Length: 211
Image (cartoon, rainbow, N blue to C red; front, side, top):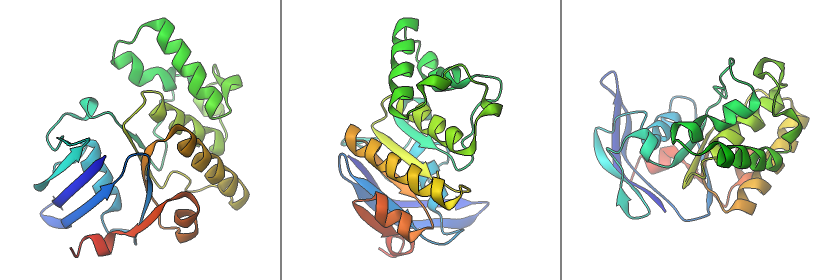
């Protein structure tokens, strides 16, 4: 499903990723661990097309997408800080990517309602973003990424900053949601327990970089 081959990426001339290779099968949830500054977020950004790969290739479903524009990759990305638009309400945030694709209004409304139901927040469709709790905002960020039915979902420490009880509950809900939809997922976390709880496989980026 997703394969990165010998990826090299630099940030301000400093090597961040060196000959990194990773494979994720269809419907698999892979957790990627490692210390801060080890290149986990950079790898996600390269896969999503937000960072330039200096060398190496990225393949999705057998097609090379290394230089394909971000909006044509069909890859969803949930950032650590959610990056929701404060001037749009919940439904408008979730609908954003569909509107960029010029999906018809009826279909947009249908898909937004469906994904909000999936994350258990259908009742908040018209709520302002600034009035969401931390856990609600995380769910909306996931809903926004899922609504366009990405071929791969990238999660960058999506549960950071939550209290332990909410973290545990959302982690379980997120795992169930991804498995029920068969969503191919790369989940970045520094939390080993979180990684083991959600993933089919747990990889350490430092070991990937040595191959």
